[in-house]
Image 1 (cartoon, one colour):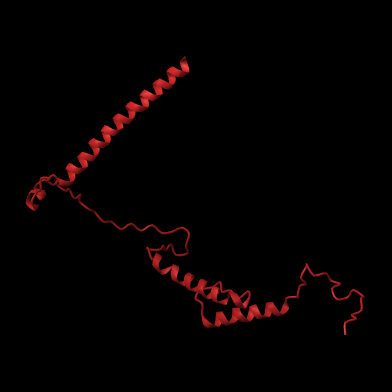
Image 2 (cartoon, rainbow, N blue to C red; image 1 turned 60 degrees about the vertical axis):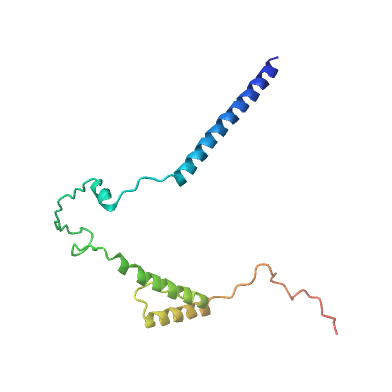
Length: 153
């Protein structure tokens, strides 16, 4: 009997929640229609300015403080020249990307002068000449030396 009673409570609860949510949806929908088509009071620019809150600008005081940096030789610091730091590194990375097909050519110093680029290419060529050819580990060392004579015509 309790299972039947629980089912009945669930059915009634579901029904009334549906009715209430439907009524709330209709009220919400109608208020949206009213907001779309009802004229709102409009203020002319003079009335808008009159109703603005006053703006308080605090008094500014600009001071220069010089605190030498303990990490540099002369105590100098940067002054926000962040835009001047990234381009050389970006250009050097682009050059390194262009040199990548040549082997291990890489430039690690800035500025990337033509002399440094040529030196990096020459060093990469010297390294590639000094590298001992490695055998493919998947091909056995005795490949082609099986002792079986080739009898094909």
